[in-house]
Image (tube, rainbow, N blue to C red):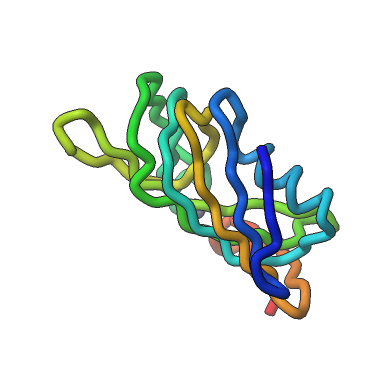
Length: 140
Ligand code: ZN
């Protein structure tokens, strides 16, 4: 994994085969003092676990995709959850016939490469737990 600051608040990050999500992005943010950011990426993943949040059960249903897939879009944000950088991201993955699946990114492993833009904000934003949804929502 290698990252480069390309503008005062913008980073370009290359995550290599075998590296894991969300750990690699969170680790990069911790190392560089990034507390809150917009995250966007493309690449390829295997062992992807996507979730779908059930409002009734207040938990994620999960589905695993072990094979290599195109990562057509990784979109999300980093905020502070209990004082530590936390990645909330959604992913759309593509199969060899171009069929797509998408959902809340639980985890994944880079199978080829992953190219990520991280745009740091001026001020940090924390998350707080919300009873109504059972989620940790932005404290803004
Ligand atoms: Zn989500």
